Length: 434
Image (cartoon, rainbow, N blue to C red; front, side, top):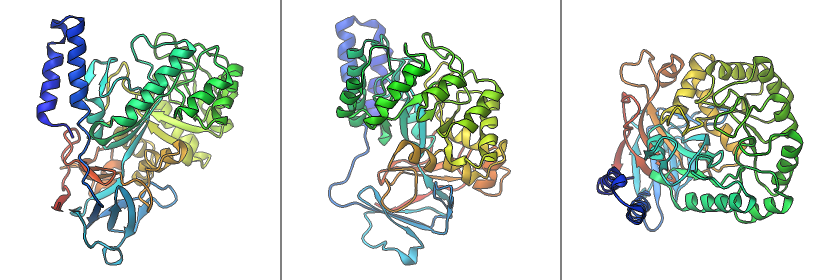
């Protein structure tokens, strides 16, 4: 978590940023990055055992069984060791014990579509701390769809590969508030050959940026590059709908189908959606993930959801925000999508939570997203917001309200307690031993 002194120092430096020359600006940036680099949660030395007990509702993140009959979770060294009734699991010798006070525990939320640039700053909105703010919306993991807002983004093959490797390395080492950002997603450009994808994979790059944001805008070329990427274990996402930034263009159903990327990125538009018949065709004729985003067309989002439901393919639905973007940063964007799809899309709240957890983890090949032994211990603890018309958490979400977050845990460590962004939860967990 951020220390107030470091955060204040960073804010003060950037407040006076325009007052300095180039060298002084560089020094200010260096000091700011150095301060922020120490803002990861402190990890205790030696074995760490976390016990969360008295859980009133345990959401698994798994569509097959979204609610578990359990009230206790045990974590060893950042990974889930046991899930069950308190009397049946080993809770002895805990280094940290949390009394959930009857509130709900769910997997930490995953944002499948973000556009990071440099640490916890985005030039798109000139905003500091956007990732940390999303942590207070229950997001513990983010997946980059390309660092496309980087000023002067290189578009030559050497430059785009270098930028991808840099971003992958930087966000592996830097985790604002503990949030894990899977970054280093190069935008494909004409001139790339198979060896470029082999080289990227060997360097640790595992994802491509949105296809269509670069110079490759025809299905035949894109499909070849997607095939090369897939051969070396790199997952692909394609831009869908009208242009979102200068240089992008319309990507219609025909190119999406021909390209056959692993994820149909923002199928509800980012922001401009395709016509209804094209969205339905993508749901029916493709087997790939259907990514619905906050910064898209809400009507198209509901159409996608209902079509996937009719096809009995809800396992393909994943959620993202597509932020930072022209419409800003939405710290509660994933929660808002869960509430929208549940309340207006007529989906049980516990199922909607799976879209932002287990579904995304499965499609993105992540080790989080499920409350199950062996998984990363990323949790969001929630309750109905104070004075919600819903009698409990699930009913409040299905009525369209946002839940109140009482605690977020990443890798078995408390990253934040009561959220500064959600409405206040009726009840919040309590740390009873630390």
